[in-house]
Length: 336
Image 1 (cartoon, rainbow, N blue to C red):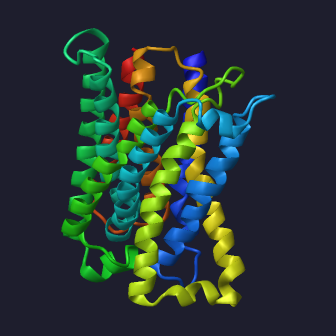
Image 2: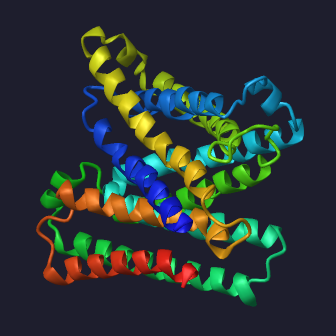
């Protein structure tokens, strides 16, 4: 029962993350770098800080938690900087492939690397016992993502250039796939950052929130990478004037804030949901892949709702549904 509750909580947060790119469509007359940086302030600084503050028990402070192991905090920030590269290219993958296909490829790669690398570093034998179950679960996840990716390639092949541009303004399959793969590999560093940040806990911290200080360290590192790139693009493209468009400021800040809290909800829910899973169980080891698989599932649901798959053949739709079904099975398999 506890496992089911944990999965449901993770699913709610995952739905929030998969919905976070919808409000960005409401941001008006800002360049990509301007809205990406602004939503990042909310997603990677403000809301993670508020979340970390919730984790502070009575009689302690956030500063005490973050300095309980300075080495762990710095490692989490370092992995966050690397994850930031994934965050940048992740945004570009949405731009070139759309919400559905872009998130599927990027998050699928992230699920595999983010689950297997920590397991290997912990000394898990992937060819015996729980390690083998974990490896098979990852293979099932990747199989579902491959089917979804193939459906995406069929969609691209069968759509006219005009239809592609209507669904996804800057559609570019080859460039988008390369960017999404890079995004997935680098985004897996977030999982490594959370592992490195495990010591950032003091007595009295609730199990529900104990992962949130480490999450803050990771997102701060990612913000450094993203802010540096976005400010460079602002200067290069002369788009600092975006922030001075006062008539749009309230609208754009509102939707960037909404995108930010929806994005952060995945890790807030992830922290809460993991507390219901059995420690050292296969489900706990598989939890990162579960989060990524749910993100892929819900992003494709949004892709359908946003008509990114409109006009494709029945075969393409059936392949998409089959891929989603395989992903759902990958969530159940480790607990069988």
